[in-house]
Length: 336
Image (cartoon, rainbow, N blue to C red):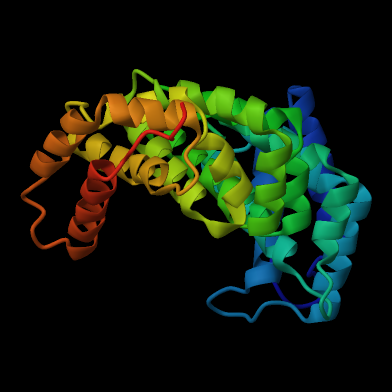
């Protein structure tokens, strides 16, 4: 079938044909093999409308606008994501490409697909649960991170109960899926600074009780990544309230002091960047000060010997010298 010329299908026809093929695939009837071919074929047609081919330019804006409208009206985006596991390997990639392209579409300053997904949040929740299915997890991750770039969509994801499943997804046994889930998790917690700070403040206890489990994980990669992210979150000035609360809890200080002594040098190093926030706090609560005073000599001695081979790392050595000085100068609060 020629892509251009008289027999070229318009957006409405392609979307209708794709929807029928996906419905047929979902039923799993005798025509499933034919449906599989039709899904692949029509996905390619839609992809070519959006991206063009080696021989043809992408379609004009007016055609893309019609295509987007047909996709919204037919509820096809959700249907495709719900049936992603039934679509073949190349087709899965095509779905992600079509989804991300349509998502990025702008009319002036408006993003119509973002507005559409805000009215159909099930699209986001279905993508998030994609991490539970090995064969579609990475495709869903690609689409989720594209969604996370838009504050309105990131907000829906953060404030949903499904967000807490990420604490499980980042620990799955398949390494590339766990890494992908962690990238999405990090994106959601760091991209929109004010949104993230408000979310963490409002849900502090719930988020950090889950986070504690990551820091105590059996999995080395999980521990290291979550510790590094924790350091980034605490040192971001937007999260000042969250940081103040975190560094006022003696259990958190004890955990970091233990992590400074871990076998892994990488974990020691990331723990150092969280530990320094406790020490640098000019308004240490008494329980924190007491722990530091009880361990004052040991800590000074430990830090003197800590990662001495990082001679080239000027910032680290300055910070270490500062901490040693701070700990040496610690004094009990008078009258306590």
